[in-house]
Each structure stands twice: as C-alpha cells, then as structure tokens.
Length: 73
Image (cartoon, rainbow, N blue to C red; front, side, top):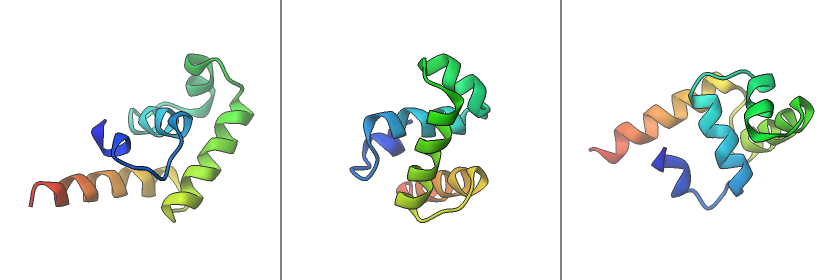
C-alpha cells in the first residue's frame, strides 16, 4: 500500500496497522499478526486517526481511496 509509505506523518508501526485495517482485519487479528496486544493496536489506531484527522476505520478507508484516486488525476 504505497499510500502510507509516502506519508511522513505515520510511524512505521502505524503504517503497518493502517495497511491491516485496509485489508479489513479486526484489531484482534492485527495484533496476532504483528505480535502485539489488541490494546496496543487500539492505541495505534487512535494515533492514526488523530494524525490523519479522521474518526474511524471507515474514514481511513475512504481517505485512502480518495487520495489514491487523486493521485491518478
């Protein structure tokens, strides 16, 4: 997901979690795949939302597709 690699706003771990969110994975599965607790995933999600000025997973997906569509224009 190149969208997040170009973002200097998110940390490496936040980018990994954002990618997993875009894959549609729940927090528990994200945590298991990245070897971190579900609570830690939620902590990173909160930081992602704050840094990108969004409020939900749905907003993250919408922002991703909106920004990707803009890169083709």
